Amino acid sequence: MRYRNLAVMVVAAAAVFAAANAPAAAHDPNTPEGQAAISEFMADLQPPDRRAPITGNAAAVACVNGKADKYPCKNVDLMSYLPMSTIGGGSGNDIWGWTDPTNNKEYALVGRSNGTSFVDVTNASSPVYLGNLPSNGGTSSWRDIDVYADHAFIVADFVTGHGMQVFDLTRLRTVTSPQTFTADKVYTGFGPAHTITANPKTGYVYANGSNTCSGGSHMIDVRTPKNPVNAGCVSQDGYVHDNHCVTYDGPDTRYTGREICVNSNEDYLTIVDVTTKSSPVQLSRTTYTGAKYVHQGWFTKDKRHFLLDDELDEQNSTDKRAKTYIWDMSSLTAPRMTGTYNSTVEAIDHQMFVVGDYAYQSNYRSGLRILDVKNVANNQLTEAAFFDIYESSDGVGFNGTWANYPFFKSGNVIVNGIEQGLFVVRPNLTPEVPPRVFENSNNVNIPDAGAAVTSDIAVTGVPGNAPATLKVDVDIKHTWRGDLVVDLIAPDGSAYRLKNSSANDSADNVIATYTVNASTEVANGTWKLKVQDVARYDTGYIDNFKLSFV
Image 1 (spheres, helix red, strand yellow):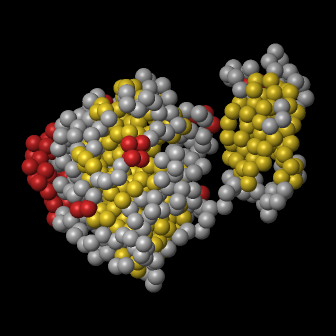
Image 2: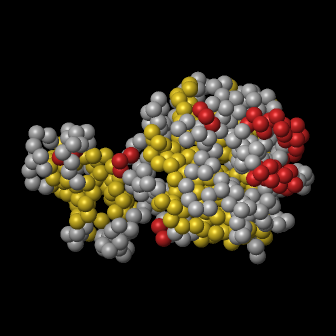
Image 3: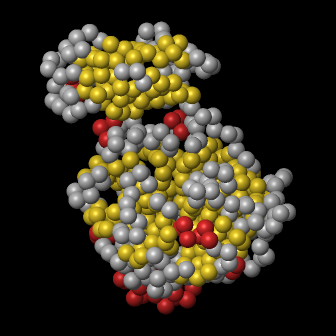
């Protein structure tokens, strides 16, 4: 959440917000909408939860008949609970996680209005509070955290000189009692910032909504984590509230291997190629009917779809159920909003992440909601599970869960509540079936301007037909890829064109992942990658061919 005009907000309401630490509305306070939202937030503010922790060997409480302890639930068990007062105080906001690569211990990084807590949650029913990294210069209701290379990167909004705190998480390995930590480094290329996201494959982080870059993404090279370096700005479309940045391997093969950010820009969904940090390229800028505050979203696992939340649409609609907007991302230059999922209950949606076949949503008063996204191609999402930390009511209000972190290999999920604190919960979901992968890594030479050649894969043990999202990984080494025509040949001889020739494409190699709707084909049998060089002077070979049946 965020205001466009920070200076006005600080002058007009700094005293109120510093005293109350209330989460703020997501509109310009100079507008009637923004003023109304501020009033609503202040009315929603409640004192911290003072209940006792739920920890110890007997702490885990199964979800039975719709309740775990006092909390409404479905297919989610309560493992433990630490109120905010036991992990540093203040009010809660963002949360992230870290898994120690040396021993697989799991840690919660808990954002609070006055700092960041570190909690060992390896034993989910007996979490251990390790200490606090205080805020750099003041309190803020908006603290945001991400992790790269065993370091946490932390920003805060409305704190003029906060910058980006860098904290070496390996320091937690030797902690035996709660400590007050200091940052290993503070990056001062900006002061306040609203959110921060990391691309773990490239070593860049993106600070959004700062006092630089016209409020757009401030890009930072953190490949050497304790020596962060300003890498540039994404400022073409002004203020960025949040984003999801990836090394792209989705269906739009024009951008395979490029670093792509999908930005939630208040009133537009904006897609930017940030591969070259000195000259980011905006690929598209799209809005939709009913847009009120484009807040945050996440790719599905195949990157064909993007799930988006809009923080203020429920307030401005007669239907107060939380809504998830489904986007077709087959083309990054022309994304399309194709459907809407309405939650089973009234609430405001806030943050969302997708892991495998499930979307994990933090929907304020209705808590953690987990959606099955396997049928997203048909614009259908279904609720698989939930855990509601704000048990007194649902509804359109800014209380309860702010964020969750669902990426631990243990399957446990950590949830941070504004008034409550840290919950460790365990969803009981249908296990995701791992893809069955078949590969041929034998080199096959491609003759210059000659006959087609094939690389063959014998598929066995896969019942029924191939999927509608058959993944075809192709690695062809060639000195002029425009010479090549590439097809996938099914066992019955049906051909699926993957790539046409192009006289103007002089680049080397075809290294790409294609998605093929092969649902009419029997899975078992011999599949072939067929490649033909249709022009003279350049040669190459098929290096690798792989099929993934999901």
